[in-house]
Amino acid sequence: MQSRIRRFVGDSTRRGGATVLLTSHYMADVTALCRRVIVIDRGSLLYDGPLDSLAERIAPFKLIRVDVEGAGFFGMGRFPVDAYPLWLRRVLTFVVPVALVTTVPAEALTGHLATLVPLVSVLTATLMVWLSTRLWRLGLGQYTSASS
Image 1: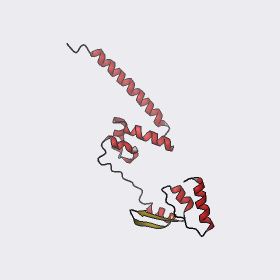
Image 2: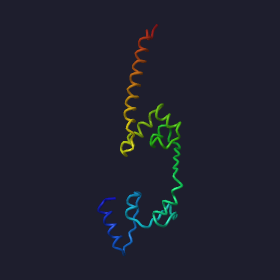
Image 3: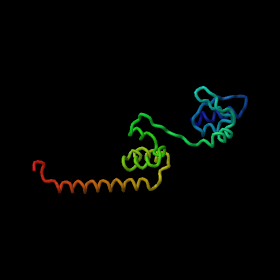
Image 4: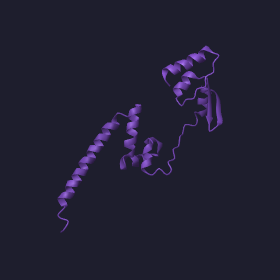
């Protein structure tokens, strides 16, 4: 939320006598500005009360499951690699580098990128280019003619 709006809402509620209906998906705004939180999902009231009680009530449920149906193999690249089981992470990272292409930029932008990931990625790419070049030259050395 813009700082001016955030300041206005905060000042209005602190002075008293004003009720402000604020809709937000940004928990920083909710934490800073709201004493009472209402959670509505598809028209049903799920929660009405203080933010602290909401956190205590929801805390045991931290697992989020992502089911990708009909997106195809490459459609799975839309999500960070951590959303998938370990065996699929390995396939997406090493066999088809979809995970590397999608997760590394996202982690870099959010500041969660491990220091060694870019180095290992560059070294792995360099090794693969070197290996493919060697195999290409080996194949060319064995090639005699298409007509013989």
